[in-house]
Amino acid sequence: QAQFPHPSKTRFIAVANQKGGVGKTTTTVNLACAFAEFNEQVLVIDMDPQGNASTALGVAHESGTPSTYDVLEGRLGIDDVKVVSPEFPNLEVVPSSIDLSGAELEVADMPNRNQLMKKAVADYLKVCHQHYDYVLVDCPPSLGLLVLNAMCSVNEVLIPVQAEYYALEGLQQLLHTIGLVQQSYNPYLVISTMLLTMYDRRTLLSKEVFDQVKEHYPEIVLNTTIPRSVKISEAPSFRQSVVTYDPKGAGAIAYEEAALEIAQRSEQVLEHIANRRQGE
Ligand code: ADP
Ligand code: MG
Image (tube, rainbow, N blue to C red):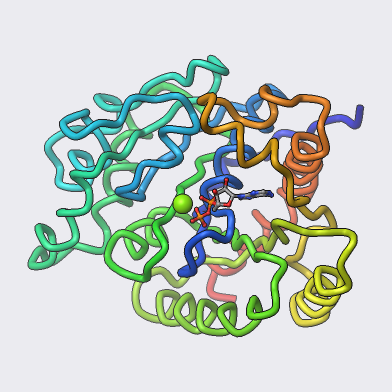
């Protein structure tokens, strides 16, 4: 097993794509668990009112549960609502609940409405006495205020790209939007990673999509792809990640390899972010 390198600074990563069903939540959850398995300290923030990441991580999220909703609206801090995942003691989760679906309207008139999660994360890091290697934010499939808050609270975006015919079209729109976010709200945001999901080795299409994405974005696409796998889709119904549900299977191995590749690129990415901050 290759040495798993710690990043020299916390990596704050939003997992985003305005398309639904491309593997955002699956990727957030399984990467988080793979990192945790490799002894990294991980925090997952569920920013999707559906709460699928909370479910998959085995964390309560019924309406009324202290959650991202309360954090975003300033009633509670992250330290008040975070819970330790039942799978890994070094993996913590800020659950979301359906209540969060009201937040976009409720905060719409606040002057700092885009920066609410950023402030909550900063406030938390001041008091938590905890060093995190990875903070992963699972985004809903939209480009509204919740995603904007997610993108303002991190400095990296990880884009899961489903290996299918229309993948590239959606990608251009997403990159355009991220460009707008960079211009107006978070100039330090970097698109650090793309990950091909639901990759089917037997089809030419999957390979074509990978080759095209690789051609357009050679620096950021991981060489690891995530295979389409029944075990990956089953795991959440057992409130487990695939990493623990089927540890020897292709899905678990792929997410572990993706985690390793992300970790190995840490210093390069952190340097890139630092350069942006110095007004590159
Ligand atoms: P998103 O968060 O982007 O909406 P999800 O991660 O919820 O997407 O994935 C959408 C659906 O596809 C879910 O039912 C999930 O279990 C399934 N899925 C995701 N990745 C895979 C995969 N690699 N193989 C098989 N099914 C997958
Ligand atoms: Mg999701």
